Length: 323
Image 1: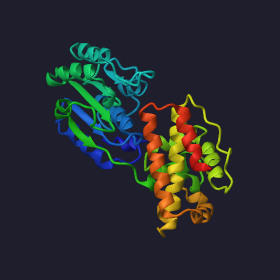
Image 2 (image 1 turned 60 degrees about the vertical axis):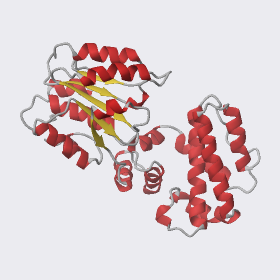
Image 3 (image 1 turned 120 degrees about the vertical axis):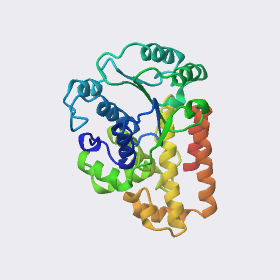
Image 4 (image 1 turned 30 degrees about the vertical axis):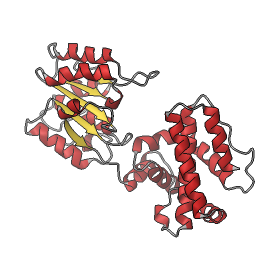
């Protein structure tokens, strides 16, 4: 049994070995929690774990060819559920918990286990958690609940206590970089930047590759490398707070790198390594105190997004930094 060998999962060998041991030794708990930063592959591990548990092959689980594996892969199994937040509200509502309770008390259709994956479990509201807690406290039959979360903040302690917590760590920078080179046909410099910038979060790196964010990052940095920058800040869609957050993160990574060069840190710690010559030049324009102020301001502006501060105010504050 080898989940990694039969999937496109990167890293997480220790976590997968542990989960496999639970299954092989018939010690599956009724509830698991996959805890770790977002974008590192926890959901992918959960789906492939579900395939292994319900695979009908006698060997080589998950086989990826039996009906159970195929149905789970395509989210068509009547014994497999993925619950995630509503797109507009970004919250898991109580109706989902009620449906889980209803389905978990019914007979299993065709699998060894009925498996519920609750993605972004930290986004369950108070009512949802109360309703789910009752189901977790009194597990029925072969139901397995896998809660996926990047934080315990906001999750009831009583829910956490009902789960066997499996901690997932960020991927090695080299693993992410090599994956981008081999599977996304990226050059070494860009793949190294993405791996470092995302802190080993392969999901975030792929998101940046699949969108125009790499081009946006170039726009931002191109402005920051100019002495005269008034009115040169790239246009911002004020209704897209995600875009503003990405702009702030790009700026944070840039000024962080300038500070590291200013204070004589080693090149291996630089994120924007593909712009090293410009970093060395721009670092001369500021004092260390300047950097600390700029970085603290940027962190504050990122908090403004979470507090729903008007986007125009945030954009105007960003423009004061680049003047």
